[in-house]
Amino acid sequence: MTRHLFRSIMALSTLTVILLAGGCRGPAKTGPLNLYDLETRQPISGPHAVAKLKHSRLVLVGEHHTNPAHHTAQLRVIRALNAQSAPLSIGLEMFRKDSQNALDRWVAGELTEKDFKKTYLDNWNFPWPLYREIFIYARDEKIPMVGLNVSRGITRQVARQGFASLSESQREELEGVSCNVTREYRDFIRSAFGAHGHGSMDFIHFCEAQLVWDTAMAINAVHHLEKHPDRVMVLLAGSGHARKMGIPYQVGNRSPMPLTVLLPHTPDIFDPDSLTRADADFIIIP
Image (tube, rainbow, N blue to C red; front, side):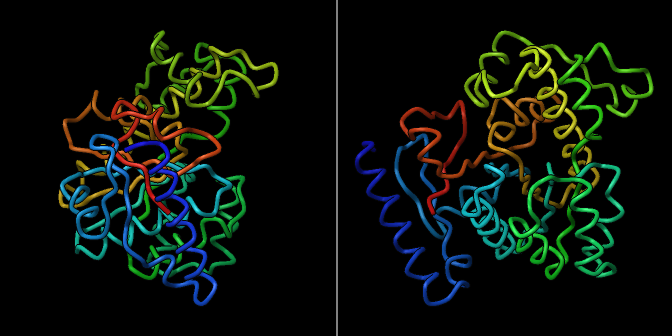
């Protein structure tokens, strides 16, 4: 597909969402799932799009954390798969593994939104309204939500002082995660996150922090799916982590489970022609 045609599809899709949202907020979120296939360079929609996902055990859906449209797209993926009666779990970059009890109580309806929001804000720095509809839907549909991340202190320390600075007890929390930053991974980090914007942080330490994050989330996702072999996990994470060299690569090192990577439409960040199947499988069309 040419760049011009792709952009025409994007513009038409965005206009449709705006028109629907003007009359009623619901249809924009419950409409068909629309994807752009990075292999065929063609759009697919509705049941054809869902069919591309339903044989995966793990569906990673990227986001830019502050973009509301990306969270709407994530919810659309969750709704589409849930409508197929596939038992789902939702894996979260936004929650640490040690906050799992709060997630379980939320899904069970044992916590008020006010009380749960406190735990959310302890785990994540971005405003609750960005993610609220996803959490409400999971609670209402009784879809398990799984905290995949490690403590903020560990990733902050690795980013500032390097993986070698971790103590024995800190490494025990990582369940044997190693940290071999290859040249390929450094190049991936530069393309996915950019080599600037991290202040005085050493770039290799930044790479190590991202690798620890990717690996820990992959291990926790694999453990959950091995424990629940009937389930499909929709994993929500920043697009840099969701791309194939991030979490999916670490999953592949540990399990042959089929997975699919979806990235959100982000015209100000990347041109669709610059992405290939080495990055993702599909772009989500608004």
